[in-house]
Length: 350
Image 1: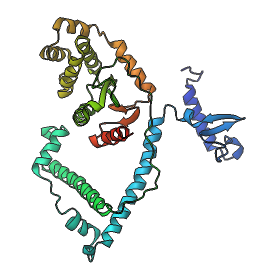
Image 2: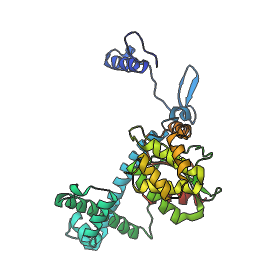
Image 3: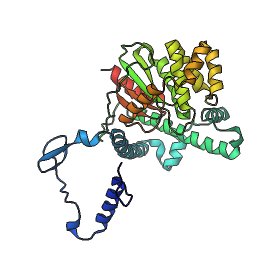
Image 4: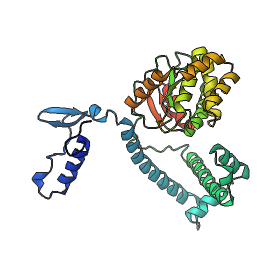
């Protein structure tokens, strides 16, 4: 980006201009915007008869817009659920004389109890260092798990109440943005013509990606031949070993596509072993030809392929890993299997 003589970038200069205009008191110093209904669907603005379309306005910011719209939806839907809960409580004959909290604990969540085993499982799954675990931390985990269990109990209770009389909801729920995601010769498993294709952009050094890999394994187990899993490399710049790990995985694929997934699993299983020596040890363990793998790794053979994956991801608006596209529908982050199932089931039902 070019700079002017004062050293401002054009973006920086424009930002300064905006601040300057915002500080002016005279109305004629402000841009002349007229807010009104669109003349036709899909038009965001017009100037001098030239239209700016919604699709062009949203290009590159689809995920940001979706996240913002979902936040509004979740706030409204959360309030609706709270209203329904209170309404059903007040209709219950057992409610008489009890506060909402008392009724919740006595009748709705009476069976909620967090065990020590559940706390230990949480600590293990979240990879909390042993030296950080103390009675206070365990108590906070217990409280968190109790709240989550009570939420599930409330959902079940409302489900029972609405079984015969469903609630009609008219709140606008945004649809996930859909992208045309290139697959090309990326590593994949599952039938090539599966009805559902899941493309994952991931980073072998990212702890959330490791967690997501376990969820993808659950998805495979649940849906079998109905899904095709495609892997794309998106090593983040602050993960110093991520690019070498990405290259290692593609070096494994070069020898056998099945060995890509073995290398994939080995690296996600222990992300402390992504240095060169550890990668060579993993390659030997899974049965790769050591000399060929070492040469491939040391020459950074798949640097261009990895950079191409990253460029594609940037065009798709990816800002973090893992990011998934389920038949093109965006799913960001290490989401639970329920989120994947919601999207997959919807497409399988078509």
